[in-house]
Length: 76
Image (cartoon, rainbow, N blue to C red; front, side):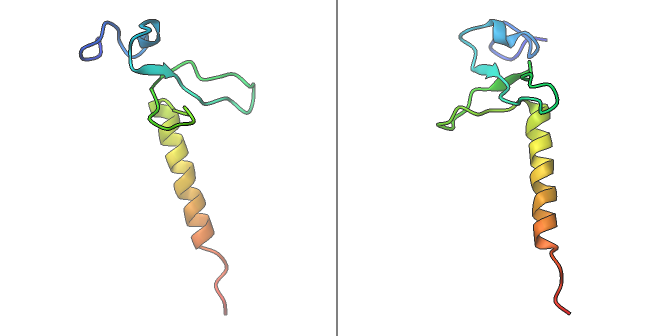
């Protein structure tokens, strides 16, 4: 199904140069390849933006890191 108000679905939206999407900024550590999925164009100045999958993974990793740092050794 096409995205609302656009000519393409999320899988092919990068073919529309006027769409408010660009390629995901995630780069694999294993093979150095960039994620081919579409991500909303960033409102941030640095232009870094992630697709839904990598946004979710980043959020989960950040939560885990926060839990790890706040659960430091307890003084006894």
